Length: 374
Image (cartoon, rainbow, N blue to C red):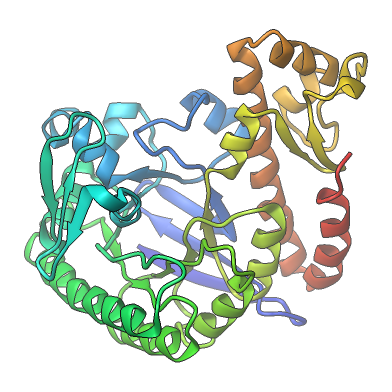
């Protein structure tokens, strides 16, 4: 993997770059649709290519390990072959999913032992076998195993967790080097910054991660309701090397994307566009719509004429309202495709504005518009 930093906005830390992988180029800043179990919910791959124009999607090691299993993925030639997707794939290590099991897992220095949410069977993730599993998945960008600290947590817990994550990181890097071959050397490993909401821990973690000198770096553990997302992101970006891509995990709203792009983030993922779509919440270039509201029943205007997309232009708000009221599956599908199209449009527009040094005024004006409730 290679990263070319093309331009930094003169009024902010917003960056435009190109990540080159063996499965294609990724123009940053970029949003990655979440395909947890080998599928972006309610969206087929053809729509990801043609409507959404996704350049990279995300899979999850925990879910793919449990089902369909590494033996199936290996026979299929990896996740790319299994799902017929020829563009880049990033895989999360499963650390967050294991963390979310709460009373169904136990964390030790060796790794994490957990009960499957599918059948209750017992499994263990270690920094080493998580690398091995992602080798079988064949993702372009792999993540190390980390502990996503709970929120709130004490300073002592956050420090001990961060230090263990750093030890796991070294084990993961060692295993990555040990298992690199001529056929899988296209794969790249990203470390993850932790440290909860404590500034000195975040800075220490960022310095440790930067010293590992991997091709890219990630920031984890920021999805907590404290309102400190921007503050934590700014701390970490001040330390992480500028010549490598920065990935903010699990973020977020359209506003969060734009504000964090301004702080120097290059890559994002979040389930929000598809989850919101399945519930009838649409992000549009004019504002946020609850398509289940009566006001859209006889609105025959396109879902969003501001997007150059078949779905957003071909179907009306009235039709989508009807589909949701009738509980038709097509409603969730169209809304999900539209929301992902909007998210990709947003980051691509941000990139255009960065390249002409107009990002900050554009950001400030568009946030007011797109976050308004219609």
